[in-house]
Length: 62
Image (cartoon, rainbow, N blue to C red; front, side):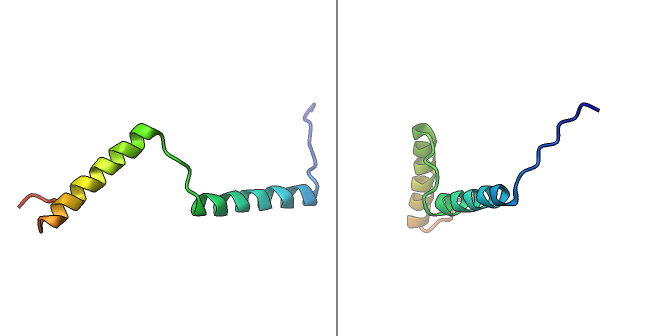
C-alpha cells in the first residue's frame, strides 16, 4: 500500500521516444568529442599503425 502510480500520457511517451531517436541520429552524425588526452592517444595509435603499414608491415610480429 502507499505506492504511487504515475500515469504517463501516450503523447509524452511518444515525445520522449522521438527525443531519444533524434539524439541517437545526432550522435551518429556528430560523435561526442572525446577528452583531449584520449584524442591524442588515439592519434598516436593511428600514426603508429599508418607508419607500420607504410613500411609494408602490418604491425604484427614476424
